[in-house]
Image 1 (cartoon, rainbow, N blue to C red):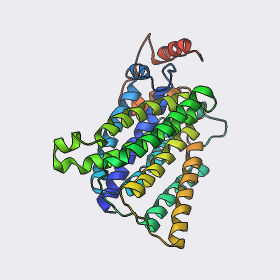
Image 2: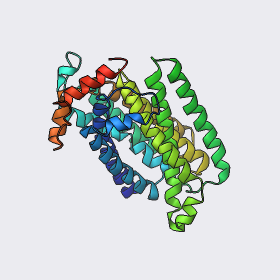
Image 3: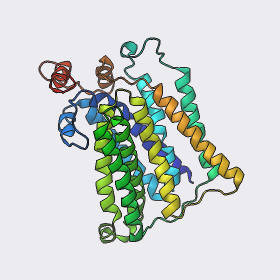
Length: 329
């Protein structure tokens, strides 16, 4: 666990946090599509805030790849939990408007700040107590089938639940998204380890193709989950928690990474992950997210020096049109 790994991972979390705020606000501007439908991207590409999210995601992804190239998967992915922390701080600092939030909502809610502190303490405790080893960065083809089978079960089951239960739909989509992101991070670690052997090695091994599927699938599921959720807190909490937990699991199972043993260490590691999860849930629950676009969308775009998209005379006109076209409108 090096300083470079920690700094790069935290920088990645910062950009992913920026992307999260812009993403959540922009997905509410377009009509609802079925899960995994690429049509939502055609609508979103016309939203300036969504383009901000794309740019921030690209930078964050590049920093994540860099961190994973010389750091342990079990170190990098837990640090990316801070994308939620940064997202909450950014949402409360940029374009804050309490008019669309429940009465009594405070800009700097002490409960939300306590959640931020708990998430930070949990991640720090896990890394300090567990001291995850780097392990190795290669996995044979024998790993492919159980990995894919597990992913198919989780994602397939989640999509089945999403199709049958409208109330559970956003939560199921969030779980599928988190699973895809966790497997994608595992694949990134394997792909970056093969760079030194040249392109032939990279493109003749399975991880690059798993990444090519799980990355875009997770991204689209992310858009669907944010758009579907009337309450975004549990959606964001599930995605934020599932990614590092799955990444830690696969690194321990297939990359020969190790955590400190002994009853006291194991208790501390489990307790730290529970504290991290509790902090994520509290932070997400108290984050200032709304389910309809508010004036703070325009404020954020103005702060970031990006003009709000104009259509039919105004961005609000586009939103009204989208709502009228939506079955839910």
